[in-house]
Length: 381
Ligand SMILES: *Cc1c(COP(=O)(O)O)cnc(C)c1O
Image 1 (cartoon, rainbow, N blue to C red):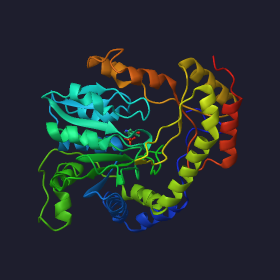
Image 2 (cartoon, rainbow, N blue to C red; image 1 turned 120 degrees about the vertical axis):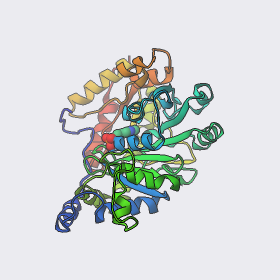
Image 3 (cartoon, rainbow, N blue to C red; image 1 turned 90 degrees about the horizontal axis):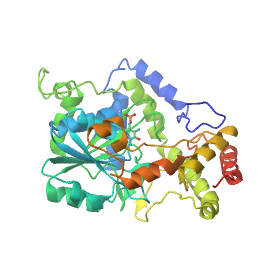
Image 4 (cartoon, rainbow, N blue to C red; image 1 turned 90 degrees about the vertical axis):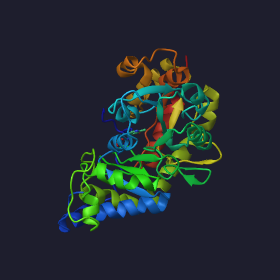
């Protein structure tokens, strides 16, 4: 990405990461499942209330594990919002699944659960949903439909660590949920993720899949006297050095979240009147949702206004970026039958959404500059 004076993202870095990485090296255990992996996993389990949290090399890999755990087979159908990151569905397509694209709500930009009844067939095996910008999907309605049809729900919670819906943490609703610790996310170790397992019956197999298809985790706990190849699997464990880096940020989770909340509130409060005047949409956070303060976006009146605004901000040294292109219109989406008009809300909003610089290290004066640049913009038609 172009390096402007005010970038779109700066990875969170507190400084203490280096102390823990040093400690991990001094422990002489830098492969997976060392003491820092253990600390991070127990932290996630305690804070979220999930049965098992397994650190992975990425959110993408956690999604691949979910697809393996659900025994996705060629011909199975998996419902996914068209407005998401490619790996939400690619992980399932890798197992042979056919993606079925759903449209989104125009306010929260989350999966429109009203469409599920029409999209579910006898072959539907899973619904993969995304809590966009850390704002919860309508989990009660979605879980009720999924239960009625015997379909698994996977929450791609890459944006949504510590978000809640009706008081309960996101990531605890579906059979599985996945987190990302990529450098663009609230908490990072460069590349990393986690698989959250809510049904205890899946824990043992999840450990096996993560350990190259072996029962090595049971061996280390002394539950078997040798380990061997027992199932499909791959190498999904991150180095304990990365877990050490991540632990430094988990340890200061409330500090990081409090600052992100201030940044979000400042944008919202100072842009509210401006947005109303220019017919710009701001993020919608329903009353029963506590969000994770992952991003701040604008819904501009048109694509041409967005293009002009990106250019003006860039001239002032500020990088603003759009987000997901509709998956059903991508080259791969079209191979699965996607065509223009299938998901009209996604097609419209994807052209008009703009994300503003949003990161832990954003200073007040930088944020003031972004807000002034928006207020000075005049090309509304
Ligand atoms: C970032 C992101 C991913 C991918 O995360 P990685 O850790 O980079 O694999 C998946 N889904 C969503 C919604 C994301 O935002």
